[in-house]
Each structure stands twice: as C-alpha cells, then as structure tokens.
Amino acid sequence: TTADLETEFDRIVQSDQRIEPRDWMPDGYRKTLIRQIAQHAHSEIIGMQPEGNWLTRAPSLRRKAILMAKVQDEAGHGLYLYSATETLGVDRAELTENLIEGRQKYSSIFNYPTLSYADVGVIGWLVDGAAICNQVPLCRSSYGPYGRAMIRVCKEESFHQRQGFEMLMTMMSGTQAQRDMVQESVNRWWWPALMMFGPPDDRSPNSAQSMAWRIKRHTNDELRQRFVDMSVPQAEVLGVTFPDPDLAWNADRGAYDFGEPDWDEFMQVVKGNGATSVERIANRRAAHENGAWVRAAAGAFAARTAASEKE
Ligand code: FAQ
Image 1 (cartoon, rainbow, N blue to C red):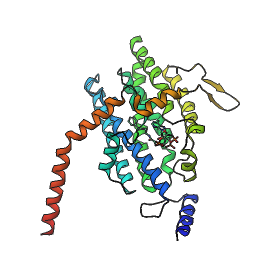
Image 2: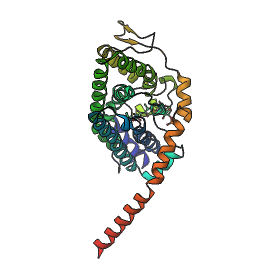
Image 3: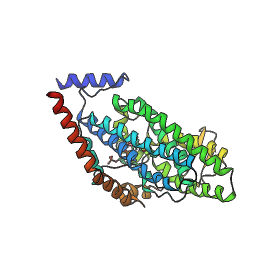
Image 4: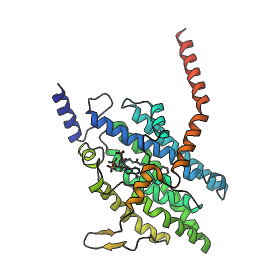
C-alpha cells in the first residue's frame, strides 16, 4: 500500500541511505528535486556566459587556456545535472525549453555583467567559493544521482576557486591600477555572492521541507554565515576589503557579524529584471536554435546505426 511505501521511503531517508531512481518517492519530493536540480543545471549552463565574455580578451595564452578549461567544466556540470534530472522522469529538451521560455529559474548571480578582467578572478574566488560552500553538503543529499554528481562537481569547483584566488594574488602583486581593479570588482560581487544562498530562512518557503527530506542539509542562512567566515581571512591574505561597514568579528558567537543584503534587488533579479537577464536568455536561445541541425544530424545518425545493427 502507499502507507507502506511511505514508511519505507521515510526509513531510507532517516537512516541516511539513498533514494534511487526506481524507488518509490512522494510526488512532492520528485517535484522539488526536479526544480532544484534543473535550476542548478541551468545555472551551470548560463554561468558559462559571464566568464565566456573574457575568453577573447584574456591577457596571455596561459590565462586563456585556463579560462577556456573552466568554462568547459561548467558545461560538463550542466550536462551531469541534466542527466541527474532525467532520472526523475523529465526530458532534457523539455528542461531547455523551460529555461528559454522563463518557466524555470537559474542562479541570480549570473545576471550581473563582467565589466573588467578582474571579474574572472573574483568569480572564481567568490562565486565558485559560494558554490562549493552550498554544494559540499549536497554531496550527502538523499537523492543518489544528485549527491553523486555533486562529488565530481565540487572537486572541479574547488580547483576553479583556487585558480581565481591565484589570479587575484598575481594581480594584487602587480601595479596600483591592477590592485584597484581587483578591489572595484570585489565591491561589485560581494553582495550578489551572498545572495546566491537564497532568501533569509524566515522567507525561504522550501527550506523546511527540503531539510526534512534531507535534500538540503543546512539552511540558507547557515551556509551564508559559513561563507562569510571562510572569506574574510582570505580577503585579508589578498589585501582587499568587503564593502560592508557592519562586518565585524563577534567573539561571543565565534563568527562574523555582517550586514543585510539588499533583498529587494535579489527579488528583482530573480524575477528576471537583472542587468543582463534578457541578454543571457537571448544568448542561450540563439545557441539552442543554431544547434538544431547538430541535434537533427545526431538523431539521424543514431537511428541509422540502430537500424543497421538490427540487420
Ligand atoms: N537565484 O525556498 P528557497 C554554479 C529561489 S552555483 C535564483 O530558499 P530552495 C557554479 C528558489 O529557487 C549556482 N533563485 O529555495 C558556477 C525559490 O523559487 P522557486 C547554482 C533563487 O530551493 C560557478 C525561491 O527563490 N547552485 O552554478 C536563489 O530551498 C561559477 C525561494 O527560495 C545551485 O543551484 C538564487 N540565488 O533554496 C557556475 C545549488 N535562491 O524554485 C559558473 C543548488 C533562491 O520555488 C561559474 N540549489 N531562489 O520558484 C540550492 O541549494 C537551493 O535551490 C538554493 C535555494 C539554496 C539556491
């Protein structure tokens, strides 16, 4: 009966074992996973654009090769995550339609422009840094295919974070103009990076249920705090500051106090009114439409191969 299936599902989740694609799961669990994993996949794919903007202008062959590899890694992450979503019974083509028609979201962070080359380093350091902070606990997510995809994604994101930090260290030991460029970039990205963790806990409609199902392992505010605590000493090593007058060590809590992100700006960006929202989706749509002939050719080739194997 359904009650037995539910009891078994709860037992698996509560004992920290994994739900696998063929296991029974509540409809809400399936829907939540499709929403979160698809949004995550879309973020990786849209996330190629801000840094991709600097590929043709990287200052050396070495920096260009590194950046190209990083952007390709993001494409790979998107593909594993679309595959993980497909195990829940949806089709990748449908997910892409949802993205370009604005029916599914992607991370707010990718709706900001990359105005200087320092942004490449700051995205690696802060955006990949925030992504790791959020995603390491997701390696223990209750849904098997998602947790397993996260392991490899996190390893690659850690490498991306290091490359961003290394690039910024190089710029910080350069000229005053380079140091100013890094600080200006940090000023623009700090608050949007904090918004990546989602709305505050008292305004996060999905957290409680997702935590009960062990899809999420920590609340949005817990992870935001962890990210701040991790980033401040790194900023000191680099020699940059964060644009927050309320940022201060709190000895009682053993953590940094920090100011409130502009949640009105966050809501606007999530609604599709970010500085580059329209451009990001237009680029994705154009790439999808320009790739139609590749999908058609691959489909025709697969059908012909299957037919000749039958003969
Ligand atoms: N942007 O109730 P909650 C990367 C939405 S890293 C846009 O708290 P939830 C790597 C949320 O969907 C970035 N929307 O929701 C990379 C919900 O709306 P819905 C991707 C946001 O799911 C680095 C509503 O607000 N990482 O790509 C955001 O429990 C460099 C209420 O929120 C992931 O996706 C936001 N920031 O918690 C690539 C990680 N925050 O769906 C290239 C996996 C919230 O009901 C270069 N996802 N919303 O219509 C998660 O951990 C969770 O989904 C959260 C949100 C924590 C993002």
